[in-house]
Image (tube, rainbow, N blue to C red; front, side, top):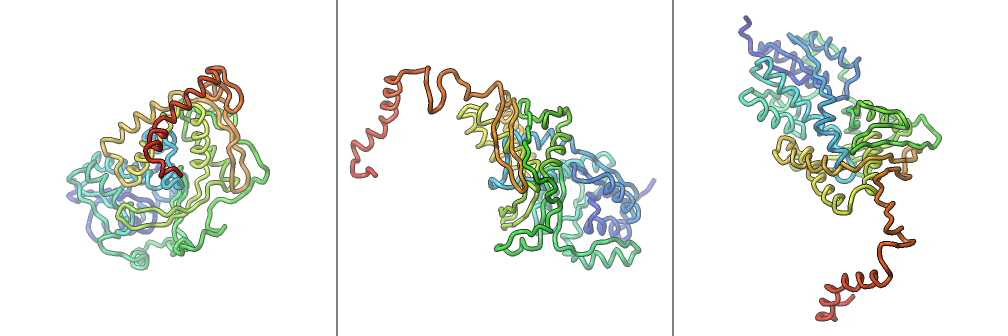
Length: 401
C-alpha cells in the first residue's frame, strides 16, 4: 500500500493544470489523479491527447468524467426554459460549465478517497470561486491546492519548469484565449483589452460557409427541443449540436459582454454562441404565443435570478431547485415549432406553429374584430380602468402633463 497522499487535479490539458500535475508529482510526492471533466467542450482527439500528456507529466491515473448529459439535465434545460442571457447578451457559457466540472471532480475525489483537490485557476477571475466553493461544500475536509494562484506563477515560469523536466508542448502565449463548450465559446484577450475595439474576423473560430438565406425550424415539446428542420431528436444534447452546426455556418451568435465579476471588478469577454442565441430566441418566440401575460412576467423575474446565481457560483443555494420547479411548470404548454430565418452573421424571427397558440382565440383578433364583448362593454371597461388616474388628476390638476 502506498503512503503517498492522493490529489485529484482538475485537468484541462492547458498550461496551468499541466504544471500542477508535474509539480505535485515531482516536487511534493503526491499520487496524482488527473481528471478531465467534460461538459461537451472536448473533442475525442483532445481527450486522447489529455490522457497521453497526463501520464507523461507524472500522473498515476487519468480519467475523463463525461457529465455532458448531467449538465443539460441540471442546467442547460433550465437556462432554455428561462431564456437566460446575462445582461441580455451573454448565454452564461463557461460559468455554468465550471460548476458541473467542479461537481464531477468533487465526486471523483470522494470516490477514490483523495486527500486533496487541485485546480489551475488564478486569483483574478471567477473560476477560482466556482471551484473552491463547490469543493468546500461537496468535498468537506479535502485540501484545496491552487499553485498558479498561491505562487503567482507566470506563464514563462510554468513553461520553463515543464521544459526543464522533459515535457515539451506548444504553450506559446497566444493573442487570444478560448474556452470551447457546448453552450458557446468564450474569447478573451487581444482587442478586447481596449474598450474602444471589437474582435476582428480572425479572432473567431467559426466563419461563414453558408451564403444563402435559409429557414431554421426548431420544434419544442414542453420547452425542450425535440426536432430540428424536421429531424427528430430524443437526445437533447445532439439537438443542440445540430443547431450549432447550422448556425455556425452563418457565423451567428457573435458578441462581447461587459459584466461584473464575482470578486467585484468588471470584465469583458467575447463569445460566439450560435446554438444558444438561436435556441433562446426561438424558445422566447414560442413562449410569447403560448404563455399568459403573468406567466411570462414572473418567469422572467425568477429566470433572471437563476442566471445570476448560476454565474456567481450559487448553484448549490437551496432556492435553485425551487426556481427550477417554477421554470419547469411554466413549460407545460410551450409546445410547437418556432421558425427563424438565417443569413450570414444574423437571423430574424419569422413565426410559430402551435396548437397552444393563444393568438388563435375565438374571442377576438387583435386590431380587427371582437366577439367576446360589445362596443359598449369595451367603453365601460376603459372608463373603469381610467378611474384611479381620473381620481388623482382631479385632486392634482396642476400635475397633468
